[in-house]
Length: 318
Image 1 (cartoon, rainbow, N blue to C red):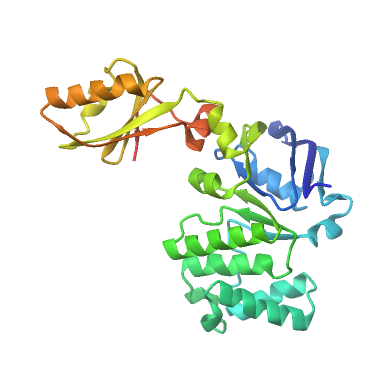
Image 2: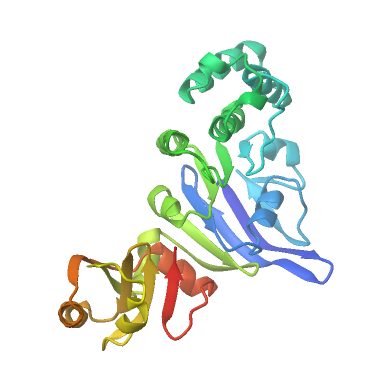
């Protein structure tokens, strides 16, 4: 039995098809990433899996429980952390946590013990009696995660958990995800942060225009586009006008400006590196660093979704 089993799910809103025959499974104890551009169908999928919305066709099961026919039984297995806050600002952190526990019918003694543990885990115990309206965005996000864990779920839905957060909150949340995974909790993670998915997830699904474009481990997905090798180079002086010049190097198929560096895509780095050094000499420049890269999960994402718009092999990423 899988933690999540999605079978031939489709969802239509009038003439708009948000999901089109979507199929996938998530194993128990797996951290599963769900990636896609805006409007791809990520939110619609989560709304169906959590019983908020019903599919037009198909079925979804949570630990064998049909989310439509056995909604209450399925929801008891899960915790949900939405991208948008579900916190009551005029209540204290403790009151928010206890209110959520009551909704999940967690017994009084258990919810108080678990509430203390969670607030200590997320660094909020000293602020437990403070009203939430005075909390920073990072503190609120940590509290929503505590609320999602108060019922000790077997499956946790995390919708953009680290979006726009400070470094400390990011690190805490990532540590918690690793700890949950180690304890056998299944984590379903949607994120725009591709590197986060690369580091945290056992498998990743990429959804685009309502259809699953690919599902596999991050490393296996990277191997599908081995030709997307690249060289990152920094010059002194750093001149953005180099973008149009570097694309002229033989063997370079695309150039991206990334901060103060340039990333040159090629099928043969050994051919292009000497040409880069020659280019630097011809332009009275010094090469500060040269790094070669294999394909990244971001490259896979771009290839499968067609997200990035490029002109004549040149693109700028700030």
